[in-house]
Structure formats: C-alpha cells, structure tokens
Amino acid sequence: TANIEQALMLAEELAGDRTEILIVSDHAPGIDVQAGSRIQWWSFGQARANMAIVNAARTIAADTERLLLEIANLSAEPGRATLLIEAVTEDKEKNTQTVRKIKEESIFLAPDETRRIIFDIPGGLPLLRARLNLSGTDVSAGDNLAVDNEVKLLPARVPPVRVSISISDEQLQKYVMSALEATGRIRLVQNQAQIIFTDNPAFIVSEPATWLIRFITDSSARAYIGPFVMDRSHPICDGVSLNGVVWGAVKAAEEQEQTVRSGGRSIIMAGNIPLIRIQERLNGSWQMDIRFQHELSTLQETASWPVLISNIVQWRSDQRPGVQPANLRLGTSATVTLDTQTQEVWLTAPDGRTRELFQAGPGATALSMVFTDMMVAAEQVGLYEVTARKGEDQTIKETWRFAVNALNRQESDLSQAVTKQWGDWRKNEDTRKGYVAMAWLFALPALVVLIGHLVLVARQGKLQP
Image (cartoon, rainbow, N blue to C red; front, side):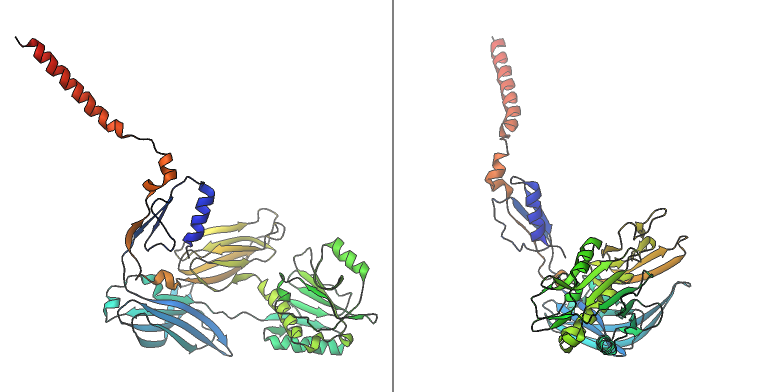
C-alpha cells in the first residue's frame, strides 16, 4: 500500500529545497519526473504474467455464511486454475491440523479478465482457506507471485451483546424492546449483562463490564422541535436524523451544570438542553442519560429510533475486548481492545515470532494507565495471535486471532513492470550550485609528468658535446 506521492511530499518537506531525492521501484513513475529536477526515479522491473486473488470476504447470511472471491488474470494471455476451498481445524494441544475440502472448481480466465465468485458455505467453520492451483497455460508457467494465490479467512460472526431491561414504564419498554429486537445482535439476560436499560434514576451498576443506559422521564417535560445539535464524531449519532422530530424532555439546568463539573459530555442537545449525555465512570464503564418523554415525542415513530438504539448496541459491541476486524489486508492495522484489568499483552506473528505489546507493571492495569486500545500493524501474510493476561496472578488468559491477506490488485499486477531511469540530477541548476569543478585534479598529474619530462630533456641537451 505504498503511496510514493505522499512519501515524496514528506521527503521534500523534511529534506529542504536543495536535497536530491532518489526513488527506487519496479514500475514507471506516476508523476512527471523531468531532467533537471531534484528527483531521480530508478525502476528495476520486468513485466510478468500473474493470476491472483484480488479480493476476499466472509459474511454472515442467516444460518449460513457466504464466501466472496475475486480472481483476476493480470496478463495478456489466457489462464487456467483450480480453485480449492478448504476448512481448516487446528488442535493446538497436539499441534495438528485437520483439512476438509469444501469445494473445488476449475476456472478459465481470458486476458485481463476478473471474475467474482460467491459460495454458500456451512456456518461456524473456524478457518477457511482458498487456494489457486495454476496449470496449463503460459500465464502460469512458473508462478511469478505466490503470495496472492492463497487467502485465509476467519469467521466474521460477532457474539451478541448481552442486554438486560429494567424499565417500569410499559410503553417505553415496548419501544426499547422493539428496537433491540430489530438489531438482531442482542441476547436478553438477567445476570452479567453488558448493557442495562432502565428508567430508575437510583439504579446502580458496579460491574466494569456493564454499561448503564438510563432514561430520565418526568411529568414536567416539554416538547422540543429543535434546533437539535448532534456530536457527529460520536458513533451513536451515525445515521440519526432529527429533521421534523418532536423530542419530549425534562429541562434541568442544574443537572447540566453538574454534567460539566463531573466531566460528562453532551451528545445530542435541543438548543442548550442536553437530551443525551454520556459519562465514563471510574471503573472504565459508561453511563448514558437519555432525557426522553415518549408521550410528548415522535422520535419513536421514526426510523431514527431503531437506528439510535442499534448504534448504542454497536458502540458497546465495539468496546468489548478483542480484535477488529478479523480479516485484514496486508499493510493495514487491527484494533486491539483490552479489558480494563489487563496486565500484559503479547503478539505472535505468522512467522512464529512473539513480542510484547503491553506491560502494565507492578500494581498497574490498562485502566490505570489510560490505555485500553492499541493498533497492530499487519506486516505479514498469515494468522496473528493476540494473548492478553489479567488478574493479580495473570492466570486469566484470553486469546484472539486475525488473518492478513495480500489483497491488492495494483501490487499483484506485474504486467506494467519496467527497467528504466527518469530524471538527471546533473542538469539541475540548484544541484550545480552545490558542485565544485574538479577537472583540474585530473590534469595536475599529467602536468607534473610533462614538466618532469621537459626537465630531463633540457638536462640531456646540456650534457651533449
């Protein structure tokens, strides 16, 4: 995913006006490199044919899953390959793998053809592997880039968010339940909930893994038609539109002042009246206060109501410990979300090398260090494993994996590779100002030899009778 143009701009900014820049690549420049500029572009490439998997995705569809593949013949010759789809089950204790063939199909591609293939596959498979076995035509006579012939995909299925509801207002409870069921991503529980929806102002949550969504209702509420102000940088506002909406809420200026003092943050406001505010508690969990009187509101009758509830569920889901996304392209980054009690995190790369990502230190945790998210660069093709340990004796261990694949059509296309040079520093006026003429150094030895020769000739003339 190299961006030479951006790298060039950075080099020019850091190096100054009179610095010469050399770019080494395997293809022609995408920028204008002229003789006399400060840039030279050296390309050392050779055009080759290549067949590649240029796109791959694994999605959920009801009780089954779907596998999407895009296969490209990046050459001027036709190509033939056998596509093999396999399910791989690993036994870490025995250090063995069980491979089961799911599908095998012969593929013929015309020159420069790209084909999209979609398979329905059984759900719940731990790891899918798709491979191209090339054979039969000039395009595959000795594969020129093997890294793009295989992809590994982990399941994209996300566990449902555990939700508990403790709402005494029956009508409000129906509105909340209807929106939650529409998400298809929740499971109602009585204990160990990740989100609790309530309208009880005295409800207390002590568990750090439980978020509290509290509806504040009051008979003195007023109806507001705007102007509504939303913090679009927050995920719960994504896709929410309040145009034409009537929102009933209680006006409480003293609570607004308390919100500011306690470090709370208003996400949606009607003028200067906070409608939704959030606050992070000391144990690392979140509390959201929603001022909402449904008798005076039309919000629950619009599409923005299920969107708002769905965004809350998604926000909580994104904050669960783990790695997102499960499948990445080479050169991108994965986000690792840690439990607030995490003590240490280790990363094992596809080549087997292990390195420490995070160490809390004696008596510290990820929460006390204000460090609950980290980015991990996907620098190798294959399966990465992240291991997190928590607890005072670090006996509680969680392990997550993510897969990295070389899915970049531009990098797989070898047909444009070339060997050539562009640019010439010697014709650059700024460069010439930094040079000193050194030709006289080469003439000096010859001059010394010539003088010595003349001296010898003169002496020989004087000695002759």
